[in-house]
Image (tube, rainbow, N blue to C red; front, side, top):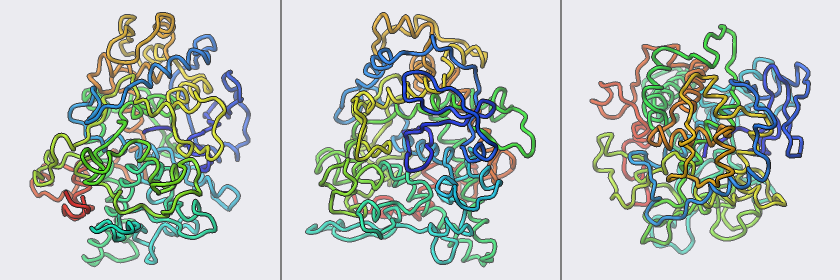
Length: 563
C-alpha cells in the first residue's frame, strides 16, 4: 500500500507534521481543524523532510467535516472478500506491483537521518537524506562508509546483509529447515522479542507487510549478485560498491519507467512527461536544487495503491486455495517484525507475543504467483490462472479489511485510537488531507489545465456508492485522493489519468532526475543485466528480469518451497 513517510521512523505512518517549503511546519492540531503553519528555524527546517505544494490550499468550507469523512470512508471500504480474486480485478496487472509500489514509496519518502538528529550530521547529509529521489536509499541507507549505516552491510563493506528463515518444528519437508537469504536480516539481540525481530534495514517500513519485505529481500539479492559478478571480473574493491550501486539504481529506474509506471498511469501521459519534460512540478530546477515532495502526491495521488490491495492472496504451495489456508491480508501483516510478530500464534497487536523471531520457512514467497514470468519469456515459470494473483483495479473501492488496520501498520502498538473509525485507512487518508488543507480535485484540475470530472461522473456505478448529500458535496468540492481514484474509475480504464496521471508521472520524472545516479540525466544509458539475450538486445528490463537476475534464473530460488 503506497503512502507517505513519517517522522520520526518510530511513528511510521502517523505523520503528525509536514514541513512545506515556503509555508512552515504544518503540525496536527489534534482537532478537526486544518493545521496552521508554524515558523521553523533554518536548522529545524533542514531537519524536516521537504514537502512542497503544487496547487492552491483548499478553503475550510471546501473540506469535508468529520461526519462526511466518516461516511465517505465507510462507503469506500466495502469491497467484500472474494475467493479466487476480487470481482473487479485489474486485467494484466500482477499483484506484486501493488507492493513494489509501496517499496517505491518508501524509497521516495525515507528520512535517512531521522534517527540521528542529535548526532553530527552535515547540512549536505540532511538535504540528501530528506530529498525525494528514486535512489534506493531505503536499501542502501547512507552507505557502508557511514558509521550508523555500516550495520546493514557484511564485513566486506560491500555486500548487504540478508536473513535466514526459521524452520517449522515437526515439519517433514523443506519447511523444517532454516533457509538463508529468504528473510530480511534481523537484529537478533535484545531483551525483548520485538527488539530481536526488528529488521536490520534502513527503513523498517519495508517489514510492515510480508510482500514488501520479500521484495526488499529480492533487492538485497540483486545487489549482492551483481557485486559478486563485478568481483569475479576483477573490479577493484575501492570502486566495487559504488559501481554496483550505480548499476542497481539505474536498472531499478528503468524498470519503474518502462514496466511499473505504464501499469498504473495512462501511457500518453508518461510519453509526454518523459519525452518532453515536466510542465508543472519544478519544471526548470537549478543545478543545486534538491527535489521536494508535493503534498498532492504524498497525501493523495500516490495513495492509489490502497485501491489495488486484495483481501487475500495465493501465496505459495502451502498458503493457497486447497492448501492450509489462503494468505489473508491479516496474515501478511502478522508475519512481519514491524506490524506483526512473525508467528502463527499470539496477539498481532502485542509485539512481544508469539514464538518465532524470524520468518517461518513456510511463509517464503512464491514469486511466480506475484509477477508474470511467462510474458517475459519464461513459460516454465507459469502457474495456473487460479493460483496467479492480480491486483484490484484502481477505483474508489478498498477491500473491507482496510477498514480495520492492525495497530503496528501505523505505529500505534500497543495502544490504539479510541474511535474505531481511526483504524479505517480511507478515513486516515481523508483526515490527513484536511490537516494540510489539500487542494480539492476540482482545484487541481484547474491548476493542471486538465479536463475536470463532470457531475455525472459522480453517479453511482461500480465504485463507492454515494448518498445524494455526499454526491452533492463531492461534485463541488471533492477530496483529491477520491477524485483521482474516480478519474481512473470512469476515464482511465483502471489507470491514473487527468490530475492523478500528471502528478504521478511528473513526480517520478523529477525524482529520477534528482537522484545521484539518474537515467533522466543519462539518456543514452541502457540496461545490461537482462538475463535473456534477445530481451537484452531489445533494451528490455522489467521486474521479472530483475527477479530472474537476483535469483540466478532458478525456479528453486524464485519458489524454494516447490509447486
